[in-house]
Structures are given as C-alpha cells and as structure tokens.
Length: 127
Image 1 (cartoon, one colour):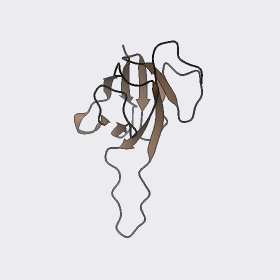
Image 2 (spheres, rainbow, N blue to C red):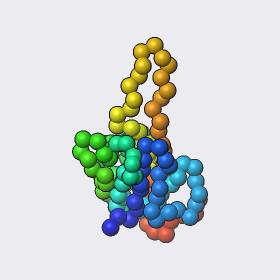
Image 3 (cartoon, one colour):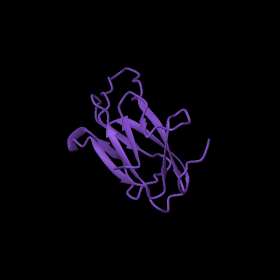
Image 4 (cartoon, rainbow, N blue to C red):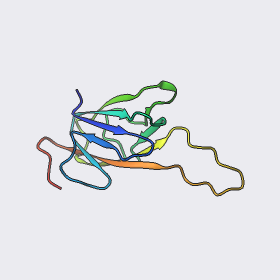
C-alpha cells in the first residue's frame, strides 16, 4: 500500500489520499523520503502525462504516463531516500492534445497542477 495516492485527470485538480489538513493552492500531498506514491488516473479521464518541470523527487525520473497506448491506470513511484526535503511541483497534461487548426490562434492545452511535499520524516510540518 502506498504512503500517498494522487488521483489525476485531464480536467480536475489532483486528489490526495490521505488528504492534507492544510488547504493549499495548488493542492499539496505529503510524503517522506523513501516513501511510496501511487498515481491513479481518474475514471473517465483522457490519457495524461504527469511531469515535474523543476525536478523530480523519485528514484526513476521521466514523465509518468497514465492511460494511452500502455493502458496503465496506475503507477507506483518511490521517493528517493536522498531527495532533498522540498516542495516538488507537477503538471498534468493531455498525452494527445487536440490538433491545431491552420490559421487560428490555438488555445494552449489545459494543464492541471499540484505539489508534492517531501519531508525528512513524519509527522508532517505545519505550513
């Protein structure tokens, strides 16, 4: 069982379980160094990629792909035991954004974001 589960979709804010007692924008989940995080694709969501643009806390870096050709609706990741205690922002984007129409000013693909707070150990700090 994962220390933290993050449910993501192509349209809604991430849902963290267990939920944080601190209401933040963007939403934030807490996990310890060496802890496990399960990413879950919400029911009815289009395939998405989860990326950490300013650096990932996980042992294996790279985009987390949910749905799409691999048809994986969940992925488990382990926070590196040497990951600095910090906040790691992530974004959720569509794997296959709608095509651009020639001659039109396209709207950027929608993104959803959240934060993952890595702490040295439990209990979690107050923010």
